Image (cartoon, rainbow, N blue to C red; front, side):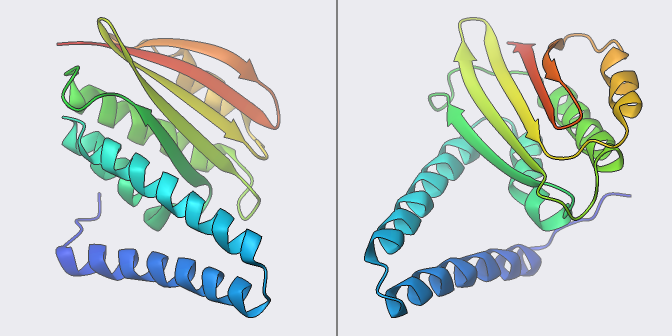
Length: 178
């Protein structure tokens, strides 16, 4: 059963994330590591810009899933980059969200817990849809589970496996416009 997030929980998690970032900045200031402070601030700015672009996509289910994944899923760290202009392409949010949830669950069950597992998602506009690049790096302990998941046919998703090893999984997913 999927957890329902209320505004208090969202704000609590968001405030916790911001406190961690502020403590990182303060700690580096205390150590007089000004170059590191500047780098952390630049990282925060880029993250906030991507969060803004993500939040502007007309896919509330998918957007919500990505925004809360790091709070709900401790088995891998998620980051995303968005190269889509606001409102340019509309796709089937429900299909994409359901597939992504299933992929996250599969990944969670297939990787080694408590390791440096990292998933990056890049979202790009295409003339007739959106292209998603899923790049995982970490420790995959059950390749067969992922292979089985990837072998399932999912129309209208066009999925291509770019790389797949014990430490890396790179997928390209195209979702046509509706």
